[in-house]
Image 1 (cartoon, rainbow, N blue to C red):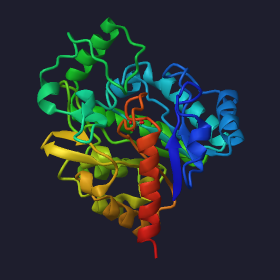
Image 2 (tube, protein in one colour; image 1 turned 90 degrees about the vertical axis):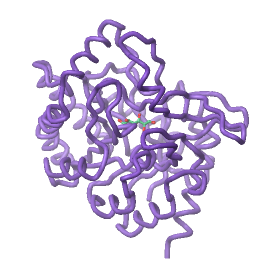
Image 3 (cartoon, helix red, strand yellow; image 1 turned 120 degrees about the vertical axis):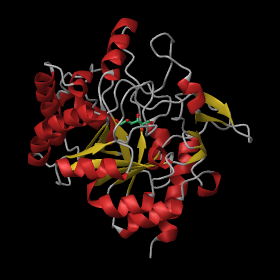
Length: 343
Ligand code: DNO
């Protein structure tokens, strides 16, 4: 497995030099952040990012993420042109040596939490999702400050989007995902690049908006759209693990051929639809990280893996979930798990 670390580019307070010093850390997962969603990622820009990473002694093979425009998810008349741009970006990425491209199909809001600095008993801060609190929020009238969304929308644009999605059924969203995949997968296959869809986080509907990548049923439907391994999955143990019905080792066994990227993190389920993010160690949360590692080794997984969100520890401040210290501890834990469960 290729151990990797997410890096947010030159503005990230965590530097490539910091990252390289983590034991066994050889790969960076990153993206171009200043190209507006929907525009083409030009080869020069991709190559520039790659050069920065390789000059720091690290490799760059996985993009997280090449975002999908809302017009594609909504299926508007603008989607064909945007899909053409997406295909061009995929081709450009492949020609620069990128092997896996992560994306998600979550309407408007990417990962969503109710609080970004919840204090755990040990004094560290973490992310928490309390469904009761989220249920009371109306995004049409509340100023939200969520970590994982496109901030370029005005209030008015955002509200229009939310209202359109509120009229959309899950089946319609699936149709739009299928339309997108039917169009982009031939390009991915031709250029030997894997797509990897991130599960919805949390894996249930929020704010009255549909969400579709949640569980085994979702993966059955996804892989039925196209059974090629390029129609891939980013297996996020934290997102999938927040839903008790998800048996993570079984999912790995069943859909292993499609898994090209693994996000390793732990969550402690508080009730059916609430959870707190813990450190990576199995005993702190609800995910059996050893069983996940065993399942990955059993399918002979050779792809990229990364520690996911970390708590804020030792007084660190920074991008919620993406500090250096706890993610580095997560990385060394992953190293230990792999060494420990390998023959
Ligand atoms: C959160 C991340 C997600 C992920 C995207 C992939 O920490 O796992 O934002 O990068 O959903 O498109």
